[in-house]
Length: 67
Image (cartoon, rainbow, N blue to C red; front, side, top):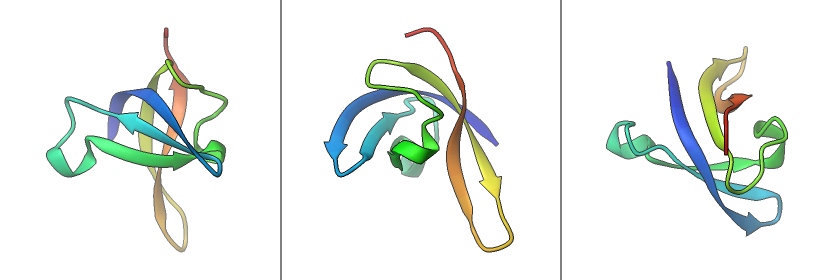
């Protein structure tokens, strides 16, 4: 699954808020760490993908679109 969102705020301690208005309600506001952002910053429009590892799954930015 993938979604389009906007990095809207730096929350401190390396955490950022990403809003995805077209996502299901429980996924509209995500808190991601800087490691999950692929270099995106506040104001960037991003494509996110749910990626599964052997132990867990995480939403990660896979592409930075236009700001």
